[in-house]
Amino acid sequence: MSDRRQHLQHLAALAAAAAVPAWAADDKDATYDEDSILKAATDFFGQTTEGLAKVIEKAFKEQGRPNAYVKGEEAGAAITVGLRYGEGELLMKGGGGGKVFWAGPSIGFDLGANASKVFTLVYHLPKAADIYQRFPGVDGSLYYIGGAGINYQRLKGITLAPIRLGVGLRAGASVGYIHYRREKSINPF
Image (cartoon, rainbow, N blue to C red; front, side, top):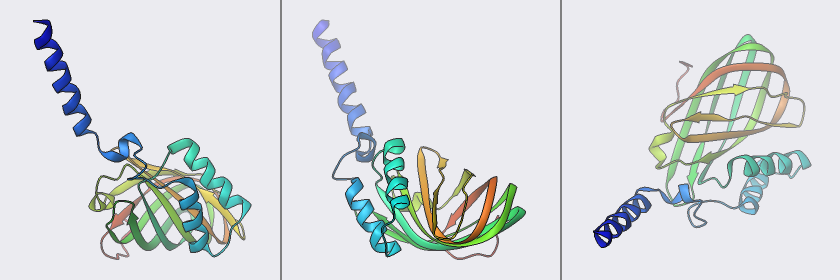
């Protein structure tokens, strides 16, 4: 009876291991390391700032290694109620990706406008198509000329960490969501 129990436990352990995606185990072949992300972000933004390096370091400490990232541009404005629109390219460590468009409303104590380059770290994305949904988030960033900011958006085990570096003045805190899509839309909902 003991051998049978050990055999069943062994089979259960094998089944559990097979069910865990590579990124969940923080597999180095399926995820990006901090140096690779810093280089990709620096190449994308065209500069290295101390703020950018610290934001990436913070994201790695809090979230670990991403298995994808999105590089793109966005614009937004708010007077209590805000809107944000953007577009970019999703790149997955294991290959694949595609064009991504996003838009979303927000409400809160938020005022101003900004135009940003956005480099979004993506954690636990099983396949590229899983990014095309609404991600709720809380944004408490302060945008200032040449400033960098980060916030987190989470849904169904997937975490997005947009890093914004841009121009404009937008200050406050708001709640809302971002709807990631395959095609461009002016509808933020």
